[in-house]
Length: 524
Image (cartoon, rainbow, N blue to C red):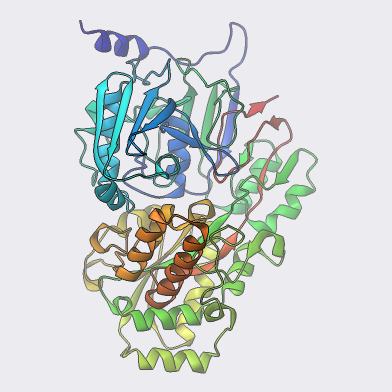
């Protein structure tokens, strides 16, 4: 029998188990939405990203200051004037099926991911080849220096997760993987999974954490619980009451107006874990229907009052949101004032109606996908739809769950054949801190994120930014990038929100970052 096959058979019976006589330590978590997709390469859904952080790993992690740090690799050596990167896998990496992690697994995983990620075209211009000369080594041969390579490989959405070669190489990147095998600190328990209701994860005892202190997705991922259970509770009040009574341990995204009630509960703690927050956006379809018209998209953006969207989503407390915003995260080095008067000086309804008429819009239907089970999305799209109707747009508002949005947004069909015009989304603000990582902003047509914007000006500024040699050059290109975005409107920004989480007081060790992570968490 081959060694990998033997190890796989042995691992199949190995579960995280408490010491004899001890009760299993289980952490019960309520995610922000239903977990409908288990493939973080296939979808950018935030709930899938959170699932992936538990079960998979990446070559590089990211600390709470947003700096890339080696995770699956020991580190890297840069040679040949920046055109050759050599990465060595760290010792002790094992897949959940018990087989060792090899460089060729990582190579196949990267190749699959690069066929889906909207940033992948930069590799075509910069990477000559990725090679796996032995079981522990990855070699990147570059056409020209790419100093941001580790920064790029530390991204979390969509994440360049590693999986066994047999899965990565045999699964079309435009289809979802059928088998979940990672090398992360938790193993997904497939037999427990019920979409719309429940998912569970067992501590993977074959995982060997790094020695460094944990910092967001970087450092040592030390696990102190035997099991994590995700319970999907769509009704916010029911979820809050379950936390207050101790039936669950942690709410990722409690409804903001329920936070005061939770704060009064002696057994509950509330606080900001997502220190970067989320950029709320509306994504227009640039390919079909009325929203393919950039003049109409500009009118739609003018109709949206970002502050109203954020107050609806987060309440009156201005510490939990920022608006108006542009296309780069406020406070980041890349944030620019270029074009900001477009969103700072709110137009009157009559002015926006004139913009709609001038665009050539003739009353055609816009199909808006409205997810009712996402607390924040439900709130801000309700405000947005009302604003769009008031300036004369014919809105077909379709009430659906988030899982349906994730499935339908992949469609390029005409509106009368199941297509769509607009959907809400939340993108991690950490991914908007510079042009490199912001997938929703990529405007490379068929290769772009759902909605498929095509704007050579955005792409030119983006490509030049990556190769810019000075900060002054970058600041100019960031301004060009944002001005082009205000003109073509790849997304409609609706504000930045920083929601507080809530958890039981006997839960400790929760790490800050831009996504919930479960290493470090403990339960008394």
